[in-house]
Image (cartoon, rainbow, N blue to C red; front, top):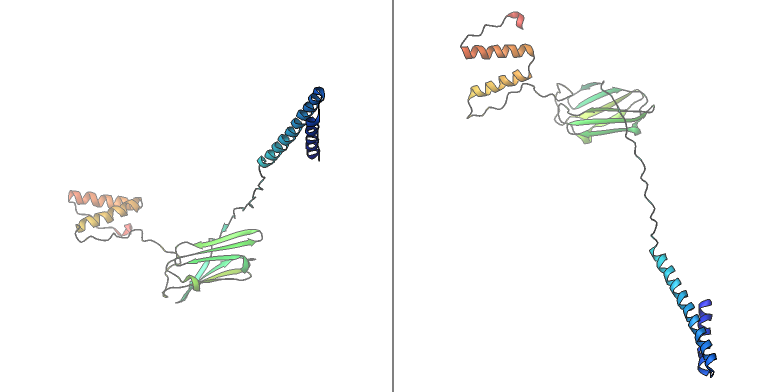
Length: 226
């Protein structure tokens, strides 16, 4: 090893320097010792710099590549039929080629959402966001047959459903405040009907308001108005 041999040389030269008697020999030995000491210092400095550079090299951390998840496109199944008995509602969807293991049904107390994947390379979806009445999700199910899909909804309270979808009453009268003037409630209802009505209804309500303000008695409706 070069470092160990050079150090041994320095020690040997120092011993010779102590025994030397002639000034010229002493000078030569001292010069050689200084040269070798500088070599040892340079070697130590080079080794230290290399070690420091090795410690400062940043570690390469591999990037985690996440797999791209494509957005699933669905074709809406808006046409279907349904029937009911006292305890259940059944929805019938005509679709050929669907499979049970690629069909996903999400039941909630007031809605149902059905997703059918990979039917000849296409995905389908059928949903009822607001059912007419509540169901029991845990007892509802979907059955896939060769040419159609049957969704069975377990009614929470039994009885008859007038429709599959829940429909809001467009002209539902607001709750009456017992301390409020009854005529004010009627006027609010009339205003609501005016805002939501068609042109003919708006004309009829406007005429009624006008007659009420002038004190004119409204004419009875004709048979052709119905």
